[in-house]
Length: 300
Image 1 (tube, one colour):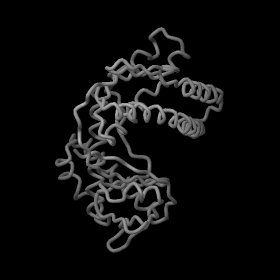
Image 2 (cartoon, one colour):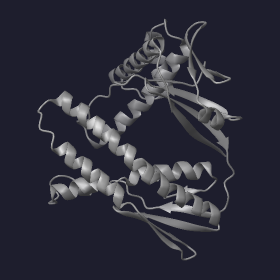
Image 3 (cartoon, helix red, strand yellow):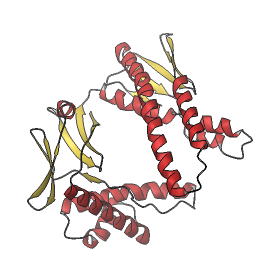
Image 4 (cartoon, helix red, strand yellow):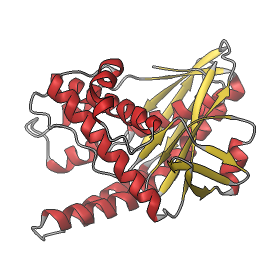
């Protein structure tokens, strides 16, 4: 069984790479417009309808990757539109580039083609090189601030000797295994951090949408940077414990739980804010990611 994981690092973007990121974003938006106009969302059909309409100045494999990225966005759009007919038409705003072809890692440099026989080089740090050593690199995603490299590893799925259930609560995470072991991990600090930033953002009085979005983005990033390590420590301990005991991991299915805490449900504003800031999805994502890389079978 192959598991796909990703390593990410920050970098300084050269000017010619920024041009390439902007071109890729434009190609994605052209494909999205064609897909919505002609009501197609399959990769094959969108390729036939849009490939010849993309600029020939760009390398062919970047055009293919742009079509693939647009296909994923269109499928998510159609899924969201079935739930809410007033869903906005998607549009790629951020500069990005995702490619499965053309790149090459030589020594400590990642080489990306910009034009035929013209390349841009990004220096990889020691951690990235150590993670990728001897592994098969699948794709590269570049933004103005970071580069993410996806790689595949071989894992052997085992038959678990027992199971550990994960109960995700607002202030803690409780695990109970089939051998009777119960553990509780405190996450009240994460709840407190989110409450603090919610109070700080609530004090912003300037009625300017652009300033408000910029400030909220800044504080949102600070909040995530403080909460993520707490969730990382808890998810790491849960997966390591399951691996040691040869147990599978079972998590409750919480799909649609946000609907219980919408405006109009006769709940206070502060209560709805606390419940909607609950990081149950991020914790599940981390557990699934780490369990996949450690040969422990996750489930729901």
